[in-house]
Amino acid sequence: MSLTTYHHRNAHILYDPARLAQLDLPVLPAFGEAWLDPEAWDERGLVVGSAPGRGASQFLTIDAHQWVLRPYRRGGMAAKVSQADYLWTGLERTRGFREMRLTRTLFERGLPVPAPVATIVVRHGLTYRAALITERLASSQALAERLADATPRLLADVGATIRRFHDAGLDHVDLNARNLLVSADDKVWLIDFDRCRLRPPGDWRQRNLSRLKRSFVRFSPASAQHNYDLVVEGYHDAPNTHPR
Image 1 (cartoon, rainbow, N blue to C red):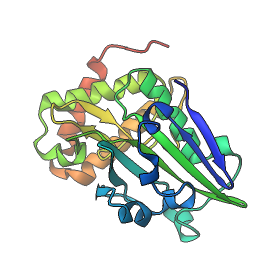
Image 2 (image 1 turned 135 degrees about the vertical axis):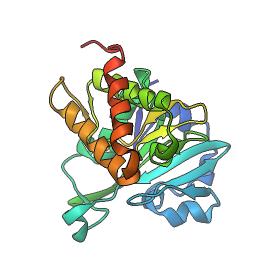
Image 3 (image 1 turned 90 degrees about the vertical axis):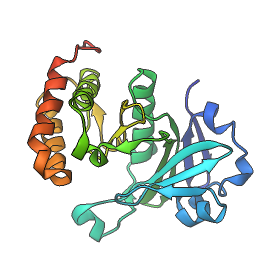
Image 4 (image 1 turned 45 degrees about the horizontal axis):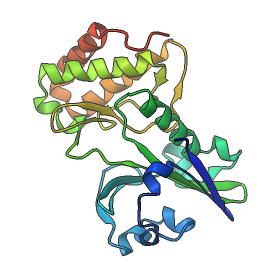
């Protein structure tokens, strides 16, 4: 089933009807700006936790469905002007719509990504704000929390998983130990595809890996090089699963 777009005044939602239509919609915040307001979800008793990071993601439970709501937030110098407002250059070019469509493409290719549920974009003249909703991966931890005692097998699987995405052409511009999740059975997942894109093979692959190594140094400096070497070994040993 293809994604569906719904528009109401200055708000636009791109969603998977197979997932959103199953829900008791009256329990959700009123369609529009309230979807971007963390308090609107909390007031309805739908928030069950949050994840660290810029513009902390909220964990939601709605009709037994587990979701993650991630608002888009700026970093660096741009955040001094506005943390949440982005320049409007067209609906399909918004961060939310681009990431929703990319995540859906990866999901349909059978890659280990959380199922995308919906994105909401609210326009205010020349700017917009947005958020993305995906299904929550139950009983998972960020790789950053596992680095201190990660087994060689797990780290090799991390490398093999990254290789799968690279062979599919994904340039993950923020590949780090928080955007790799490990489930209870040690399956490796990749999340957060904001600003990422599909492209032909190139030097971007090594840039992704170098960024991951820097995050290893940040989260587990004593074992960073050893862990990274095991990841790279698993990366190179993995078969090409998506020949281009």
